[in-house]
Image (cartoon, helix red, strand yellow):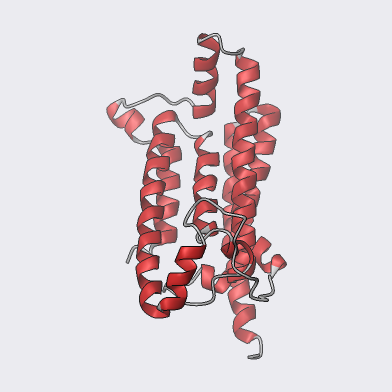
Length: 240
């Protein structure tokens, strides 16, 4: 059930992180972005000035967003948008592209995506989003591993031994499978993380949270349309 509903669950966590209804309802926290709060704290401690701290934090958020886009697009290019968007777990060859170095590039990308957006959320909302998305990712990962062990047996057990779960390992990677990546479809399917990179870049120019939020929403909507279009194209393609 969690796997089937993973996308609505992720969306709900992000929406609640930005909305943070508990601020007005129960007075928990303030309506101030994490990036502004951290910059204020760093300036008050004398570590660096507010302007310098803000610039550093924007750069960190941008790096998180770029890492998110890279992991998501790279993973989707090899796994395929239809498999990524499937509501059921699918057992298949997992040793192509980024899957040679880390078992869960898409979940790593998801974590970086929420972490990047957390800088734009209220402080309590960012804490809520990061903690919840971490719990969801760990639960989904463990559930998928149990399923794949049952479906693939010894071959997957060998893969578990060779490739780490979350921290990429460059040495000792399995041999390439010869799988061909679909970069254009992956980029279209992952417009949301790409949009987050754009949103943070725009935010760095004028610190307009509302504008950054609109860019993320537009990218999310475009991603939904692109994914639906890709599914139609795949279904109409002749079988190979």
